[in-house]
Every structure is written in structure tokens, then in C-alpha cells.
Length: 146
Picture: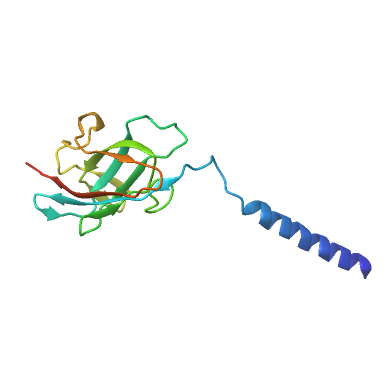
């Protein structure tokens, strides 16, 4: 009977240890992020499902994932880096935009209705800076299909 109790407590102890080990953060350390939001308007009206991407001017190290999001139907967006709407690490960025179609079957996004005019980071006129502890409101960004 005593051996059953000992085995039982050993199993409980192992499970507790595995839970503690499993709760640790995996992967490379995260950089601190700060909220970045705005509203996108195309040809005078808000548009949803437009891909908004941040491209670092300082070339952040490879361990930092790209910061991006899609606009909501009302044109608003909050940029994400690690988790939904968590923001962007400190630095200077340019924005790129692509207004495509999401194919639910193939799970691909393509067919830019903006003709690629806002897709090249080197040509982007939309520049902003993220500073420690300061959220960024990009305000209203206006694009055109013409």
C-alpha cells in the first residue's frame, strides 16, 4: 500500500514539474512594443481587408517578426508584431499597402486593386517613428486607385 502512495505522489510531482516547465515563454525574447493605429481611406471611403505592413528603416534584426495587419471594414487598423494589436517595437518605419482579395479555399491573398503603387517600401511616403512608451496615432491615411 505504501508503494502505491509513493508512486502516486511521484506522478503528481512529475505532472506539476511538467506544467511549470511548459508555462515558460518559448522562442527568442520579444522586444517591447507600443500601439500604432490609424484609419485608411481609399478614394474617399474607408475600406476593409487592406494589408498594412511596417518596414523598418533601421533594418531590425531577423528575430523580430514583421509588423502588419489588415484594415477593418471602417478602415481602422492596429498594427501587430507578436500578437493581435500589440503594436510595434521602437524605431523608424515606412508603411506599405496592398488591397487584394482573400481566397478562403487556398488561404492566399493577392490581386492588388491599388496597382502596386503603395507596395514598395523604398517608394513609400508614409513614414513614422515609434518612441519608447508613446503610442502612435497615424490619423487618416488617404490613398487613391487612380
